[in-house]
Image 1 (spheres, chains in turn orange, blue, red, purple):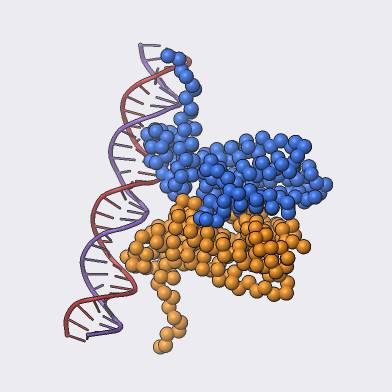
Image 2: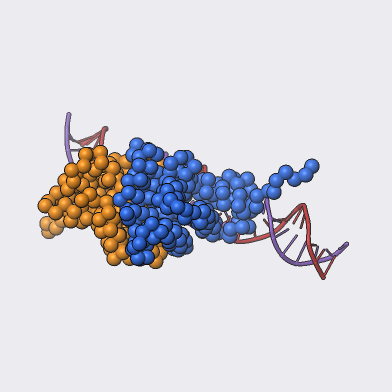
Length: 193
Length: 193
DNA sequence: GGGACTGTCATACGATCGTATGGTCTCATA
DNA sequence: TATGAGACCATACGATCGTATGACAGTCCC
C-alpha cells in the first residue's frame, strides 16, 4: 500500500505539542516529559532534537514567529488598505478559540521573554517586522514621512496587542464583538485621514 | 533601647519577596523555598500565612492590584485633565527601572491569569476600575455619552499596556523617549477634541 | 560488509518542587 | 499558674523536574 501522506517530521510534532500545552495550560506546565507524552515520543527523542529545555522553548517561539511572519507577508496592499490592515490586525485578536489559543501562546512567551534574553531577541525581531508592515500600509494611505508612519504603526500594534492581552488575561471583560468594535474605533482614531 | 521603627508584618515581607523575585527572574522562578529565603523566614512560616502556593500567588497579585488601585485613586481631575491623564498613564509605562520591574510583574501575572481563573478574576476587576477612571477623565474633557468614553478608555488602556508589554518583552525595541512619544502620540489621536 | 551516522527509546541520577508533620517559644487570659 | 492559640521553625516525603547515559535498529558510504 502506498504511503498516503508524508508523515510530519518528528521535530515539528514536538514543537506543535509544546505549543498546544502552552495554549491550554500555560508555559509553566511545559516540561520535557509532558511535551514528549503529548507528541507521542520518548523523552530521549525530544532530547535528540532539542538538547536542553531552553533550546526547545526557543525553537517553539521561533516557530510562532515564523507563523506570524507568514501571516503578515500575506498582507496584500490592495486598493482598500484600511480593510486589509484591519483584516491582518483581526488575526491578532482572540476572536475565536483558534486565535485565542495563539494569543495565549504569544502572551506566555512575551512574559517569559521579559526574563529570557534569547526570547526577547526574537520578540524584538518580529515586533520590528510587523511594525514595518503596518507602517508600509499606513504610508500607503497617507503622505506622512516614514518615521511618522513608523511611530503610528507602533501605537497601532501596541493597541492591538494590548487588547489581546486584556482579553485573554481577564474574565468577563471583553467579548469578540467589543474587541472588533474597539479595533475599528482605534483605527478610526489612529489612521490618518 | 526603644524600638526605632515598627517591624513590617511578616506576611507583607513574604509578599514583597515574591514580587521581587517575579520582577527579577520571572514567575516561573517563584518557589516556596526561594520566597522564604528571600523573605528571610523558614518555609513553614510561608505556609503558616499561605497554605498553598496558589494562595500565595493570589495574595501577591491582590497586592499588585491594591497598589494600582491606590495609584489610580490618586488621580486628580484638575483643570488640565489631559496632563493628569498622561501622568497616570506614564506610571504604567516602564520609563525607569522601578516602573519596569512593576510592568514585568504585571505581565507575568497577566500571562498566568490566562490559565489561572483566580488571577483572571482579579485582572478583570482591576481592568474595570482603571478603565472607569480613564473614562471619567475622558468624559470630563468631552461631551460624548458615557458608553463612548468607556469604549475609548478601553482602547487607551490597551494601548498603554501594549506599549508596556512590548517594551519589557523585547530587546532594542523601545527607549523611554520613544515610549513617552508614543503615549503622547496615542493621546493626541485618541483624545476627543 | 563494517564503521559512521541518525533516529528512537528506556532508564537512571541528583536536584528541586509543593506540601505535611510536628516541634518550640511567646503571650493573653481564665 | 495552667492552657490554648498563634507565630515561627526544622525536617521529611513523595512527586516531578532537567539532563545524562547507553542501547538498538536502520541507512549510507567506503
